[in-house]
Length: 355
Image 1 (cartoon, rainbow, N blue to C red):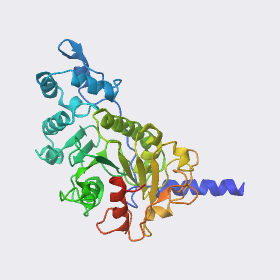
Image 2: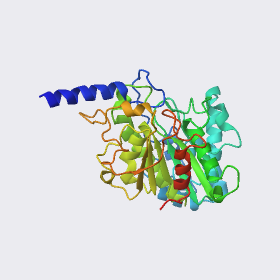
Image 3: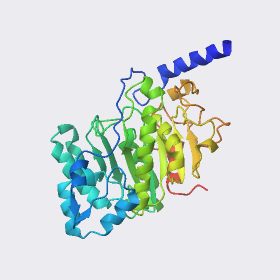
Image 4: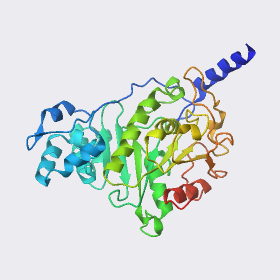
């Protein structure tokens, strides 16, 4: 009975403590945005040269890719103009078509908070204005990259605040830019010139600290979307990705692991991955873990009880992940700070240099 009581107390602490980049704030319950994008009904009712269009809810990314491969440029552009929100979010559609579709979709919202995403130099790979908004942006040349990495962030990230001012090398976009620079891609020199990085906010993240951050509901919805996103990369010929999973994002990656073709999964600042060991993730990817000495996530109890908490510490020896050096990381969001051991290790993993 005493042991059971300790478990209940630990679970209660998990509710109080587990969270993301906002730190010690209260959390509000979020409704997960799932399913096909707005405009799907009109898309389903349309045709291309008399052929039905692939259903965004049921067609696989490979089926989508094959469909677009059978269209001429005029037919593709007609679909782009008529259904920008669908084309822009359709995994398996040609990348340049998605970038252009999302510029149109962002501008069509007329909302100032999204306006910067429509700039001609942005490569927005996904944009969904529902709820707090979801967005994915490519840094680099994804069409010709030899290596691809995907940043999967944790709490308090959405399309509405994506371009908000942050400390350098933090937030999904800051992490993506820092990683490209560390590989040499950002400067156009070095062996990392062929690395593309995607900042992926393709799921509804928790807000602050609360039950959403302590349970797996939003992570399960996010895992399904992440698995489809990586299948979409595969369908257009991109290399198998490295997943860099921060905070609650590592819960998403843990649940998605066996459904992706990732070469590596890197969990950092993680409250747990909903698995007792790396082997229990049932993935062929190499699993890595990092935690800095001043990261407050260390105070989160590594338990899972009645759906609350995210389980074992990925940095523990018993978990069995490869350790990423992080002794000089400051706080919960400092893992991509230039000059840190963690960023140097992340860059080597991103370039496939670590065997």
